[in-house]
Image (cartoon, rainbow, N blue to C red):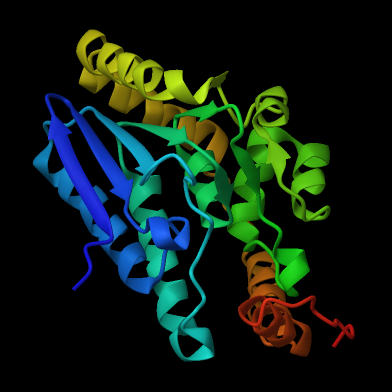
Length: 259
């Protein structure tokens, strides 16, 4: 079986690489479950203080969820997506995203969920799902909007275009933008500094406190059920959603009807 997620530990730092360069590091169901498993294994080990999350090579961080399996694999892919993101949300120590090229869809959400995001000039960010007849899931919309604000979130989600690294820095999606030649050394310099010069228990409690104060605001149950219905039933099962995926796989422009 193809190994789609690679883990390499060096001291207190663990590098997790999405290794699907032929797919621009898109994540299919197997890769999503594998990424979630690796994060859980690192947490269980307990000795790692910083995760560096990256894509293989310098062409792409992740171009999103791989939907090449079509509707047949869709349910398992969504389950893998939820498992992967939940593993990252619950991870108590530091995560740095190192971004070359596009970070799209789940690639964007991985950056949002990371504690630090460093990008190369030429990196791009977005979730152009409205162009596929779909939408970013409501939990992902909430995370993105909380981080960057309402208008920048609308720019990304409703415009359906990718923003460049400098714009991402302006809206606080990215901490630092450097040249592609510098990104790796700058990222690992930060990772090693954080791993060696910050106290793990202080980091864990501070991160947990920030999450509880600013990131864990449970929705009203009635509103949450409505959002689930809208996103799962009305959007994902619409004819436009089917057309969007079909057009993408056939490499043509979609014809949306509003149904």
